[in-house]
Image (cartoon, rainbow over all chains, first blue to last red; front, side, top):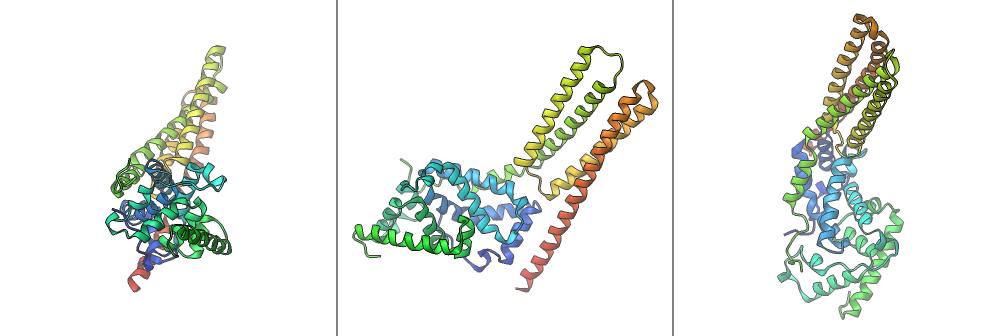
Amino acid sequence: METPMQRTDTDANGSPALELLAVRCQLGEADAFDELVRRWHPPLTVFVRRLAQDDDAAQEILQEGWLRIVRGIAGLREPKSLVSWMFRIVRWTAMDRLREAYSRGASVPVAEELLKAEDDPSDFGEAEEILHHALVEMSLADREVLTLFYLEELSLREVGEILEIPVGTVKSRLFRARRALAVALEEKGLKP
Amino acid sequence: MTHATTLPLSVDDARRLVAAELSSRARIGHVAGLLVAIAMTIVTASLCLTEPDIPARTRWAFAVMAGIGTAWSVYFTWVLAKKRILLTGHRILAGRMATAFSSLFTAAALALAILDPARRDMGLLAGALGLVMVAAAVAILFRAHGKHQELLRLRALLLEKAELA
């Protein structure tokens, strides 16, 4: 069962360990790719699940995302940016799949099983249950910025690199998304 | 309805997907295919352009075969550029294969030009195009070596940093 990422210093964009992993992949080391998948598949899955409409869509996005990562890593010019680059690749893949939903900024409901599946349902308190319901109803853009910043614990700069927007815009999107989440939670009787 | 604990793609499935995508055999196979397609194109184009006293339909047949060879060359190039991307180790191997193959091809073409006066023009044209292939192959090999060395230096530096940390 997957759990949200536990970030460490070695996982941060720009860390020597991460850069070394990227370089080893570019050299074609099979062990390095194995390590890459083991370490980053769970957080990428959490992210994709926030975006996808159902399990089938999430699976397709993850499969295509990993293929694009493997095919593109030889051309990664800044190995230290591996994390934001991978999330960006997967996001593009999801955008291709969900293009219509992104372009109209519509609220794309995510199958609730997907949001719950990475946690043990028996651990869910009522508050968390309501939080997940609130996320389901949010727009795709709000959901992704909240997921990247709070659940994936990426920095503002990393979120900006993934979403290809300036840090200032990340901050304003987070502000808007937090406000939308607060409204949604209040409607469900939960104080943010 | 999907069970709550079913994963869209397990870690093991993702690992297998990546391992399959990294297959060296498929890449080397496509490199070999590209080299053969280019050679076929050069030979048939040279025959079409230089063979004297052949029926028009035969000349057309050579032209069509040259077109087919070109199409296959484009296809293999596209696959290597978009699908079976070559990592640095693959590029070095591909560069060596290309250098060896195109050198042999050029030598054979020039030998034909020397030993068979009736095929002199064809041999010289094929040999000249072969030399272009050799030059391209050597350039690819040098570039691949350069990039590989750069990555090896960076890896050594990062390993040293990791040990000191």
